[in-house]
Length: 256
Ligand SMILES: Nc1ncnc2c1ncn2[C@@H]1O[C@H](COP(=O)(O)OP(=O)(O)OP(=O)(O)O)[C@@H](O)[C@H]1O
Image (tube, rainbow, N blue to C red; front, side, top):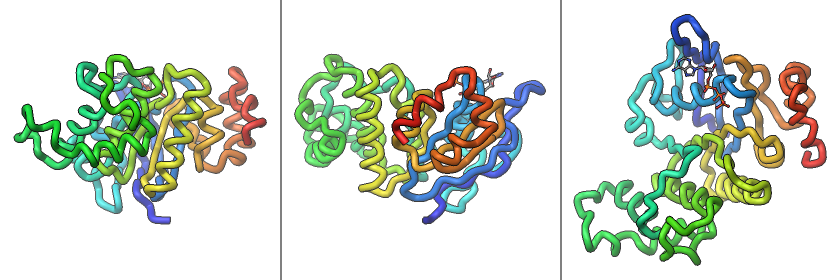
């Protein structure tokens, strides 16, 4: 499989405190990979360096073999790295389909045509994206009335409008009920399989991680202590030690 993302010896320190300490890993095309770790392990710091919001203290990031270290978020986004956030960024006063059309207008660089006639643009294409996330029946409802799980699906559709090669999802299921979490990650796994996009996600819900991720990386105190299959990670003594307190990794055995 082709390597989409390669991270080499990435480091971030704040006034002597090392938040991320020499992290190296890769993400392959069509891979759904999880980055897990306890609170404060350095997951968000890593994501922010990959997306250009934070400048690494040291190390390199390569996308499709090209160096993107230190580039601005918009440039990295333009090169095909998308991101979803813990809090949805949809426009509440607009309808579901209008939110997707807006993303398509931006993707096609047609913002200059924004106005009363804009909502005729890309409606069919927007409907295709809504079908992908199973929101076609809610197309003309205002976002303000959507259930939280549906908003997360909409956010995924919006991220896909920019045709990312790599999608970074920061705690995609945060705040959702257990059934809705599994459903959203199943949908994400289907999209990865059908479209060949790569997804790197952080997640605290181990059910979600162990049920869907192809590979799992574990970060602890800024250092990567495991990178492998669910079975490899579950049986890794260092990982067991880190999670022993919460016991969260052992609950998953039934899902393996
Ligand atoms: N701007 C900053 N200045 C100083 N320390 C910071 C800064 N940002 C993050 N940190 C520290 O770096 C460490 C890693 O934080 P980070 O938010 O990346 O962890 P995380 O794994 O994403 O945690 P969580 O799961 O709680 O979101 C933490 O100890 C945090 O307090």
